[in-house]
Image 1 (tube, rainbow, N blue to C red):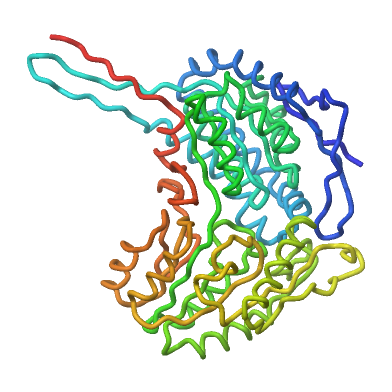
Image 2: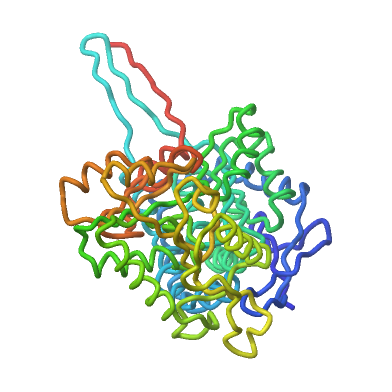
Length: 481
């Protein structure tokens, strides 16, 4: 099997521990490569390299840093098919999704922040005859970037690109479940001669590598995307060390479908927001609340179209629902389906292990997309993050009741509204407790906008100038006249 290697100080190296982790293909359940089971020593080596490279990289002109990021973006595009194939195999997602979303977004992240840094500005404040203030924004040093398994290259580059653009050096840890495109990114950096030590990629578990990065005294800033419980653990370590933190955590996102919606568009968008990437996107809408006059029709049509979804080998062109990323996640999804039944829910479709689409996938983790009704907002199934192809549908009466249902969880990442009433859209969007609200749409992303959640869905914002502000520290200077 192929061995994935760490990328430290510009060199591809095996783990100092000598230990390896089998990387499992979700569609087959079989190992197909090995990743480093790195430890504290590997993280230390990476931080040392990043710290040594920081003064030179921070002193590099904005235009030169931007040029390096553009080179990475260009190379991602040149190797896009190879990267898409790797992402599909590593994650279990349909190849079509990796081609259309994950890999293009990886290159777009580098390209956007290469341009954004050239427009990044600070402020001056005139105090008349007394003098004036001006604010400098300076990189922080070594940035620790820890990314999840659901959108591997997409979210990995979402953190790395702004950190590098702002002048920081980076020690990054991709998910141990989906390491391949991060490894290919390290190959790209070597191909273009990217300055050594500026970007370091250390593979391994969160308990070993992630914890070492978070606790390291020479890493002043941490950007993490993942589960809420892990975010709490990171905060306990990082907060007493006064590290700067960005935490993009879990979600239990509501989808409010009003009776005055554009019905067909609302139905199709709701299907996509429920089951894209097997429901394994933090922004997926797992709670659908439908206004009473159209509830019965919506449920019937939603179920018919859910049943028509093609479950298949992720590498096949026609596949719409691929494999669940890991056996652990697969079993978690099944446990929540069982919980939904215990709580009194009715499974209208799905709820079972799907038949293997072909002989190659006989040992894979495939699950039928599942629709459950009859569960009120307060039950565990509607309160806890599942992160799989499992949705509930429940009726609401008034606008106020719909808002109350939507806001009834500890999470506040995103929400979706379907209505043709513009005033209602503005009213409801303003009342929803979420960092992102889509109206008559879902997952429309503008890289200039702030991204993140409230409540248990996280702290801080990513994207656009918010990301560049996060990865820099303001310094005010007063000049007396």
